[in-house]
Image (cartoon, rainbow, N blue to C red; front, side, top):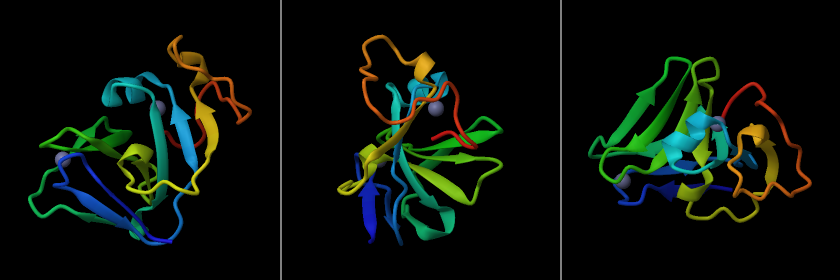
Length: 134
Ligand SMILES: [Zn+2]
Ligand SMILES: [Zn+2]
């Protein structure tokens, strides 16, 4: 099942070979501030992700232990990679053209969610994250 997506201005598009990870929501402050909201992310093995960026608009905001990939033209936050888990790339669910079949599998940093967020769901809530952050 190949899935594809793009940033808002479509300067950057991508293809994924094989299945996407189900969606995690993350309410950590880094995800909030980098996205402007909380984050809903899917993901895939990095070697299954093909990024099409003919005008070299993809930028990485690097915090050392992780980095956020975004479009320099339109600002869409698209990708996340952890320095110790570069074999996996998180993909923001919102930049997928077709997210059908993906379900919510967990909520990270639930304690940090802003008060307007409805966390009333049966999926597991975590106070932190697992081995990686979306
Ligand atoms: Zn763009
Ligand atoms: Zn986060």
